[in-house]
Length: 490
Image (cartoon, rainbow, N blue to C red):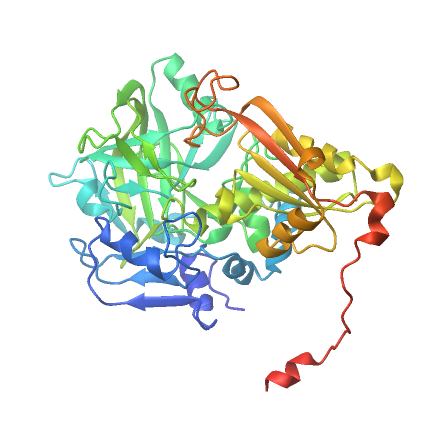
C-alpha cells in the first residue's frame, strides 16, 4: 500500500493496476454533450438509454476549450470497481458502510502547505474571472440547461458554527460568478442551514469540492435517519479510508474546504435570491436524472455567488452522468446500508442483505434477502419492507426473496417472482404515499384517485418468499459441489 496521502490521484494510481477498470484517451472531446455521449457507450450503465454497458472509468485528456484540464467520468459506475477501490467484497458493501457510520473517523484541519487544492487560485475580483472558462463542467445532453457540476461536495455549517454537513446537489453554471443549486426540500441538512441564514437575510458561506476519492463522494450521500442532523458524513469517509479527511480554511469565505480536492469553488448561498434553471437555454429541461428522464428545469433555484475557484496543477474535473451506474453506487449503496441498519435493529437476523439495483437508479427499488428460521417468522418479510418504506420515502418498490436467491442477479430475482409468487396474494400495494419528485409517473393526471399532488406514489411489495410450512417443496435442484472447477478452463 502506498504511503501517499489518500486522495483521488492515489485511488486512480491503484485502479490502473486492475485490468479493464481504467482507460484514458488523448482524442479531443467537446464537453458540451459529446463527452457524456461517448461514455454512454463505453461504461455508463444504470438507467441510461440503451445501448450502454458496464465499462472502465474514463479519463479524457484533451477537452475542447480547457487546455491543461482532464475530465474523469465513470469512476464509480461499477459496483465491482467500488469494491476494488474500498478493498472490500462488492456484495457486502452495505454492511461495510454501516460499520463506517458506527465508527467514524472525524475530519481534521491541516496546514495550508498540505492543501494542494490551493495550488492555483482565481478570485472573483480578478478582471477576467469566469467560472464557465475555469471549470470544465460537461453537459450531459444537448437539452441540458447548461454545464453542470454533478459530483461537487457542498460543505456548509449552521449559523452558530456548531454543526457542519456535506451533501451533493446538481449545480448549473449560470453566469461568470453564479451557480444555481437544487436543494431538494426536506431531509438535507445544508438546506436547513441555508434557511437559518435566509431567515435573517444573510448569505451562507459554502465550499464546493470536486475531484475526490470515492470514500468521500459515497460517504457524503448518507441521509437521515442514519446520519441525523449534526452528523458530519466526512467521518464515514475517514472510516472507509482509515485516514481522516483533511480540511483547510477557505481563502475568501469563513468555511472549510477539502484539502486534497482537485477543484474548490468558494462562495455564498444568497438569501432570498432565486434563478430560473434554464435561463440561458430555455429548453424547459435541467439535466438527465437518475430515473433515466430529463429533469424539468426548476423555475426558482437557490443561488451561489462564487468568490473564488482554486485547483491543483494539471487538475482533474470529475463528472457523473445523471442516470448512470455512478448514481446507483453513490445513492444506492448508502441506502442499502441504512436499510440494513434499521432492520437489524428492529428485527435482528431476519434481513441478510439488501441491494438497490440500477433498475431503480439506486433509490426507487430495493431487493431484500430474508431469513425465516421457523413458522413464527412468517410475515416478518413484509414487516421488513414496511420498515424500509417508513424510513426512506424515495423508495417505491421492494422485492422480497429467500436466502438461496442471489439478489445481485436480476435473472435469479425474476426467477423467484415466476416460481415463488402468486399475484393475487403476494402483491401488496400501498397507495397515496410520498416518493421522489423526479419519478415522472407521480403526477395527478397519471393516477388521480391516489395522487393528489406531484411527488405522491403507490408503493409496491412483491413477496417472493416461500411460506415457511411449504419450504421443503421449493428446494432448488442440488448440483454436485466441485471446488476445483476452474481447472477445466485452463
